Image (cartoon, rainbow, N blue to C red; front, side):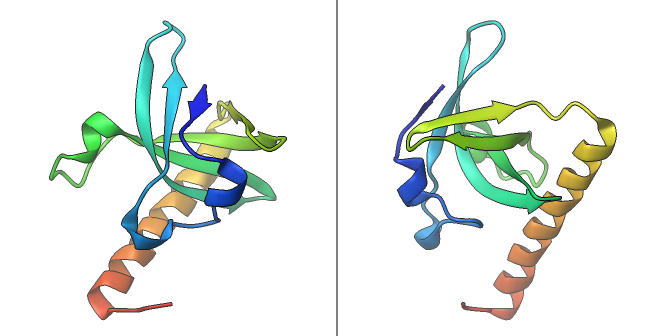
Length: 115
């Protein structure tokens, strides 16, 4: 797995400023690679998770798209580990946190909230 930017310096908890997204290339089990936009990182139950959107799905106008959720662990400055979420309960909590994050973005757009 490789990243296009220095994760420690460029990733913040939440959405990057200026609507620019970092990208990450995932290597799947079949050795194929998928380029993904990093949508956000989330803190749930004292663990960090990451939400990734395949670039091929990013240009669609559909509200529903495939988003990958993984536990995110940073090992050193440039090495990251993505861990599959194995339990249904943990996946449900992370999915709910991601949905709340997306809802907050829509709220901010509607009401013009600036931070």
